[in-house]
Length: 299
Figure 1 (cartoon, rainbow, N blue to C red):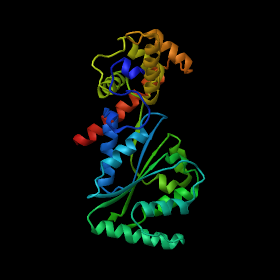
Figure 2 (cartoon, rainbow, N blue to C red; figure 1 turned 90 degrees about the horizontal axis):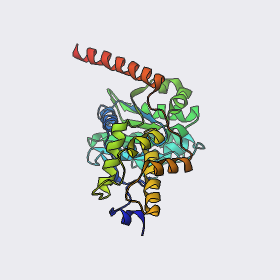
Figure 3 (cartoon, one colour; figure 1 turned 180 degrees about the vertical axis):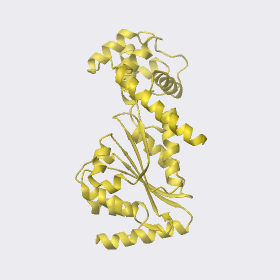
Figure 4 (cartoon, helix red, strand yellow; figure 1 turned 135 degrees about the horizontal axis):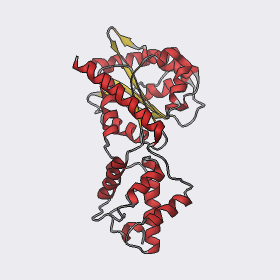
């Protein structure tokens, strides 16, 4: 008997394994998808999404891929698992993912094959989209130049290929290895940790999907989970999962603040400050920028 049976869940609610049914459409994730989809549908060329570890970039990338139906898009998702990647490898993988049969070993001929395939996709009335996850691993100027070259595949007044980078904040520095590419970013969005309200909704959502009828968390637990996790979804999952298991071992009815503190200590976590003067100043600056954009839109 595990804690899922003990709490009468249909399944464990806080596993970090990818699972589409647990997708939480927070306001910022929704805004990110809207902007990235706009970039693709408008043929902007290059869009970028950055966020800290565990903020949901990979989940968002897979969600976007699922929202690009084959009748309208020829799309692919490539995950960069290490930095020892060559431009030739990237080009060959993109060719295969977009439907080029038997890519040539010669890079120039391969590029020609890709161009012909992109023209075919265009004639079919569809858009070609390549999503690159863990893009911060592309740590060479040659790789950045390769992507700049791919963005040059176009016909009059229209780009034939749209690229979306998903990566950690250091992706900004990586892209500066090729300044002309960095200047071509048409749409950019940053994922931030969840607020307390959003984190509370996130936890309730996952419990509901797992078949929970009554929350096993005491009211004071959620703010504590938010503080220890800093609002990072992956850490929220880890804390809640361990807390539920510990509560099950103790045969308690509810997850208490004592249990959360014990779990956080075992995980080496400390209470993170989610407010603070620096964050408040940054938020004020962002609010001011948003007000400027609103005024421009009204004009």
